[in-house]
Every structure is written in C-alpha cells, then in structure tokens.
Image 1 (cartoon, helix red, strand yellow):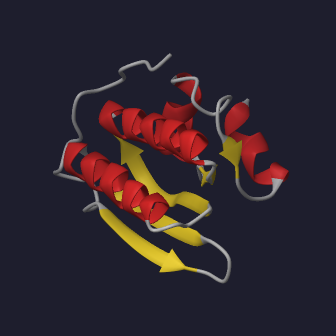
Image 2: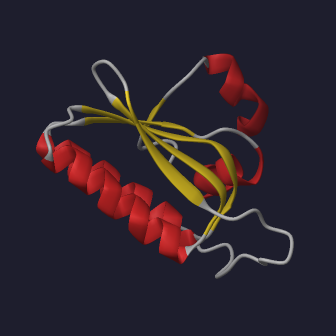
Image 3: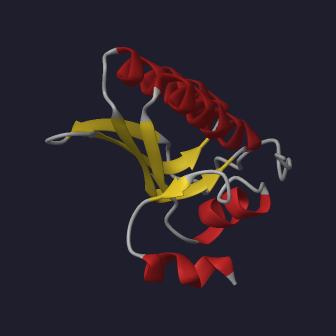
Length: 127
C-alpha cells in the first residue's frame, strides 16, 4: 500500500534533486540526493530500468543523501522493485534517515524491499 503524504516539495528551502550512477565491482549503486520530485521519480525509474536491461544483476538504491521525497518517488521505487523481481535482479535500498526513510516506512515499502547497510542504522527511524 502506498500512502500519499504530500503532492509537492517546497523548492524555497529544498536542495535540488540529483541522481548519480556509480558502477562498482559486481553491482551498480544509484545514488540520490536532495529533495526528489516527480521529475526525479521518472528519471529514477528510467535509470534503474536501463541498468537492469543492460544486465546488472545487483542494484543498490542509495537514498542516504535524500532530504525529502514526493509520493511519485515511492511509486517509482515500488515499480523498480517489481521489475527487479521479474528480471531476477537483486535490488536493495539504503533509505538513510529522517523524512525520506519515514515516508518509505509510512508507505509500507520498507517491509517489501531488501535494506542495504548496517541494521543499527535503521533502528533510529523505525521507532
């Protein structure tokens, strides 16, 4: 279940969104930062789909530098997770902390995806 929290991000104080692809030895890390909006959600979905189509079997979505997300980003992550499962790709998410992790938790997505990183990191925002 995905729950809409807010339709937009107030750009007056929000850092600009960015997405960077960092290939690693046997996997690829998709790093996201700033306040992710609807445009970033579409880019995230396309980038991850392209990586899976090119044969990456291990994708890590690193949201540790993301400050805020709109519901479209939650939907994009859910879609990427479904695509990964159908393609036999292993997707994991490093949700970070704060508002981003809280939005993913409230949407119920964290119970459906594999988490990346130390368990201790996630204890802070799961309370």
